[in-house]
Amino acid sequence: MSNQKQQETPPITFVAAGDTELEREAILEEVLPSPGFPAVAQLVVDAIEKRSEVTVLDFTPQQVNIRFQIDNVWHTMPTMDRETGDFMLATLKRMAGVDYRNRRAHQEGSFRAEYLRVKHSCQIISQGVRTGERIALYIELPKSKVETLSELGMPKSLQEKLAPVLGSDDGMILCCGVPNEGYTSVWRGMLTACDRFLRDFYVIEEESRSEPEVINVTSVLFNEKAGETAFTPMPRLMLKQPNVIAFAEADQAQIINQMIELSEKEIFVPVRIPGKHAADAVARLILCKPDVKELAKQLRAVLCMRTIRRLCTDCRQPFTPHPTLLAKLGLPAGSVRQMYKAFEYEPGMLDENEREIDPCPNCHGIGYVGLTGIFEVLTVGDRFRQAMIQTPHVDHLLAAARTESHLSVRETGVVAVAQGITSLEELQRVLKK
Image (cartoon, rainbow, N blue to C red; front, side, top):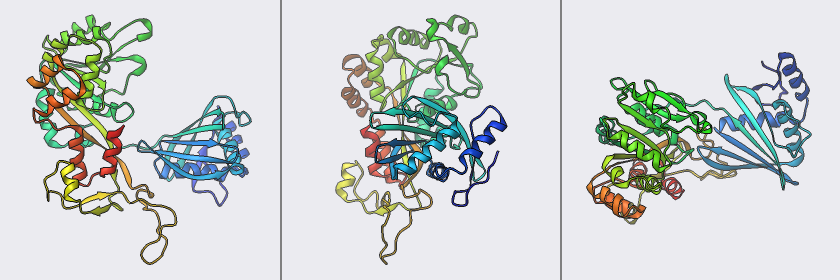
């Protein structure tokens, strides 16, 4: 449903909360004349244009502090005066169907918006805090469908290295990443890269944490609250003679040992576990105290992905890297003639002719647009297996991997920097997490 707005508001329409069309119309008629309506419209438009997944409003006695989360990074926006902010908040809450007079209780509500013919679901969560009130605004943004490792940014050379492992008839592969940072995407990409058409393929998930299905991968659920485990469905599942059984999580020695036993029975077992890099994931798994000797025997490879922001190609700034910098990055002298960094826009910046510079229309002055992956594929060799058994600490595992000509996630990230995909500063930010 659309509505007519005051002239100073941007071209956005809203559908308020409400059980009936009449109720939704009444709420909009009520908020349209409010001095807070233009501020709400502008806030939502700014969040959509800048691709803010989460917008946080912190109300203090003096002002409203605003932050946008864009591509997993928080950005501070210009502050708003408290009077305008109060009008805006009352309008926002009224449209979302919550009590705008209550500034202390936890409240949740939702509404819809349409901007430039694209519809967005919007949710707000409000909570009183010591300094005032905090509002989180979640706007559902259109996302490109990313299903394959290629679409996630994995180089062809690493895909070719991974392919024989994904075609195994037995053994295990670990898939790791940082939760809320491509953790689901790399798992789905790995499952998609497997041969799911000539093999019976299943994934075991806890029903409250299940994820969208992958084509030709049958999801098998268990109920943790009912005392079930990932192996509760196994007797019935084994009657179907599966070729591949994937586990979306693993955090108990008994369960991991059962996964290892499965992988010894001509069943290929992919397992997902959190980890900043391959050695970190293996060390975390060993901390669960499974049978490490059997784990080392059955583990074929570890796949890791970290997400990193892409430089905006419209405003990125080229520079010639110093030989010392190349040496620190492990790159041969003269191998990279040009690197790029983000253009750091600030309001009021002037060009060489003393004219004010506008922010880049592509990235809105952020310097980055969208995310891509940097990858690590560790194929487990004898030295790494020995380190798993004898000295399963992260630094020893990393050292063992290096002796087997393994490229770390840092080194593949350096390649992305050398190719101009991202900046050195962005790589350092991600790896410091």
